[in-house]
Image 1 (cartoon, rainbow, N blue to C red):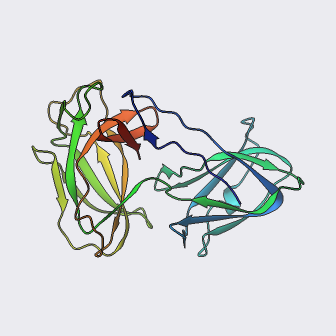
Image 2: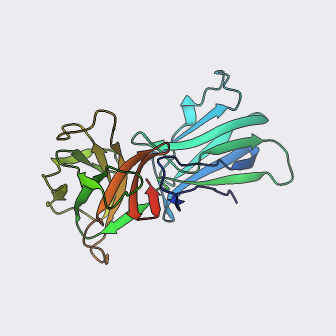
Length: 242
């Protein structure tokens, strides 16, 4: 079975940097990529494979998206490659090195995931965003992310179905009734009031609408950019990377 190593939770000291490790997948020359989310097959997910040395002679255009069963049949000559899943311009978390050959441990099926990021299960898509002002005191020193553009996308189709701006207190609310399912909140500093030109807040947060969820809305988040992308302080010593 394919394995995944991803660092998404950080302990002190507070820092704007993060680290990410990449696994190695060992597969046969003929193998199947299976992409799921929470055990459900994901259709239309792009599977990008490139040679590990960066040479441009690998053409995967003819077979680069999963079918209705969330699967993609792949044939590759022996060698080393790099594989990543992508949809709606968002990469999955389990990108890694692909070793193709006749090793006794080579697998005929590679199980990957999209999105693989933290997903908030909610009854309603609403919440409050703030912005870190002092990395040493990420929760105590912050300000509302007033005026930030927040787009709502259907995760399956990548189609935008709504957009709003955070109010002066950083609150936002997509009040229309949404069908159960996975959605993307695309946050951008475009229009951010009194923004610091040295700081760019931009990224994606995944939410799943579920009428039976215990959470009514997204917990209050103090957003910050790290070397791994958009993240949020959830306690004084813990940061979640999206």
